[in-house]
Length: 297
Ligand code: C2E
Ligand code: MG
Ligand code: MG
Ligand code: MG
Image 1: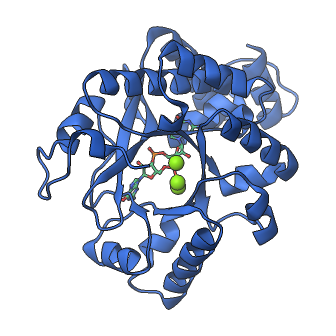
Image 2: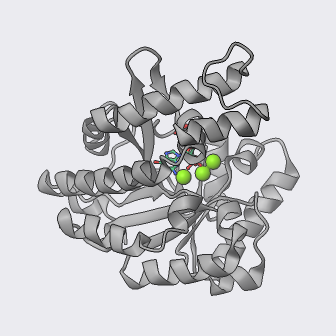
């Protein structure tokens, strides 16, 4: 209730009341979503869908990104673009983030038990990145589900990483020390410097979809992607392109030396059972290797 009141105050000024007729429709919507989201966490209405990442030539699955979905009883599937900001605004992101990390580790373990090694990437919010006990929480999830830390990657957007650059350096160091890997998401939209990237214990740069989208039409976008690939490789980082939708984009990215690709061209985010089938080559035109080679170091 405090959080809702806080939001009402922030948006509406002096009013402390709930659901007053004058309350902004948008605030009301947010208050509704907040109430439902709190229940959703208790009732288990959240799901993780997984979007595969593939090798540069598109031939092998290299991992999968966990993307949160909310199966709302009335609204249907709600996308994270809607409910993550609500969770952040109303103080639910800590609980939600914990759930995501644990559920991802549980799924990695289930896949292992089914004979499939999938490296899973989890998106971290700014709140999680600043949690004092983040490393302990992560370690606990890894231990409970008996998975190797190297099977877990965290994606942190470049702009979030830069918000408090010094503390990000320390958190990355601590996470790297326990063996999980870090990836800089939406790269190219923030303002990190070369010297900062050199100090940051990341393993991967993830080129933002905006550059990929314009690859075939814009020489600038192509130049940016080329520069990012070269930069990443010069720093010993692996580079992934997100949002690959066309064969043309795939071919340019492959020619520029992009290590991994992800996008609707290969696979949409899907339920875990579909990932296993997809990795085995079911419902997919090109054959992928199944089993141990699904794991690429
Ligand atoms: P992101 O991490 O950059 O994820 C990429 C988004 O692009 C996903 O949207 C994905 O479904 C979408 N996408 C993938 N391939 C394509 C493509 O080829 N074309 C197009 N048009 N879109 C593509 P989604 O799942 O709606 O997630 C949006 C954002 O929400 C994510 O951006 C991430 O920042 C955030 N998010 C998702 N799950 C979580 C979570 O568990 N925790 C946190 N903190 N954030 C999350
Ligand atoms: Mg991501
Ligand atoms: Mg991204
Ligand atoms: Mg993005």
